[in-house]
Image 1: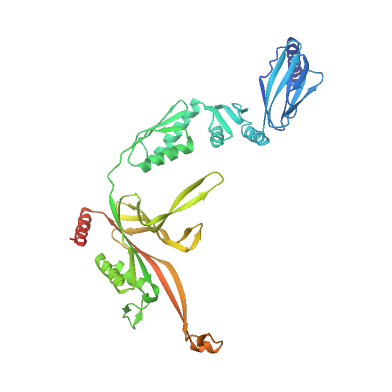
Image 2 (image 1 turned 60 degrees about the vertical axis):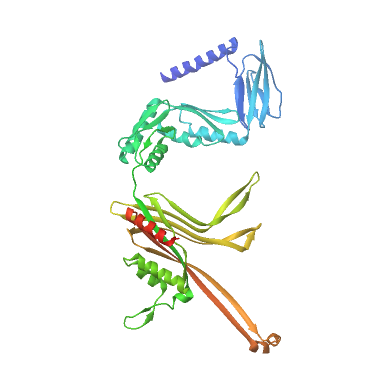
Length: 455
């Protein structure tokens, strides 16, 4: 029974095709687009003659019994295919795209070979994707292609899928604690409505939505709440290592020498920060160390504060097309981003750099930069001091003196010379003391400033 039905179906198709050829009812395409190396077959009723205006772009071949042709693309460009039938003369525009575009079209067609609602075409030197997106699998295939410059996306998303995406995003936001955010679907676009307390929450909601469906409008408003203020006291010291091993004594069972680093840590553990300040100034006065900078930065909880003492040098960046100037900062550069929790514990990210120009190494007249950097994250209680150390520099120099003329005599001259060498090690130490900023501390800072700048 199945075989009889199949034979009947094939016969019906043949009869329909013969009638179409006899009645000349098959419509010819107005244009043909091919990729380099591709070919297409067309049935032309009552074909009498065929010609191409440029046979270097494409070639055409008539197949027996004479009502079928094959157009093959040879070279990128355009030509005109002219067809003569019994009653008409038809001119068809033929556009040939590059081999790369043909390969791209083939790859895109492979992605959607099991999707009936998506269609792939050449259009204006691009690959045009059209049709309807009915499921998330197809959507995930389409989204990365939107960023391709040679692909033009003209697809539409079905309303049922958009509604499901809105429910999915709403569920994700509720899991993250955003219970009062509404996700509305309208005309292929999602709209986010509601209120949040910070810009970070606003950006988090945008990021979560973007991963599911990027075509959305965020109408969420932010209500900035009053955040705590944090005062971060930073001291940047440079200590001569050669002298640091000869300062201070400890008296357990026997006398032993200890380093400045140990002494600094002892003072940092004390409750009196004024004692630490006195000790640091004493080091500076005695020549054992130098306080390079002592910035005090105040910022909102969770926000970043920056500090720069130095300058910038211009650096020219030249490409094949353009030339532009960028600026590189140098000097004392400090970036701090503190967070404080309900128990007044402070979490701080710190990025510190001490850099200077290096005239000994230049490129196109631009000096190099010598830099020492440290980047870390700290957990401290309110008022505690953390010491960062280990950024060392090593300098050495040699000197030679002797009796004029006689010291130049081979062998004997060495007895009349004096040779010496100087080695100098320096270590950069950073002390970080974050405080929960209060009105009392602000008043103390103002009073200290007034004492220092008395007329």
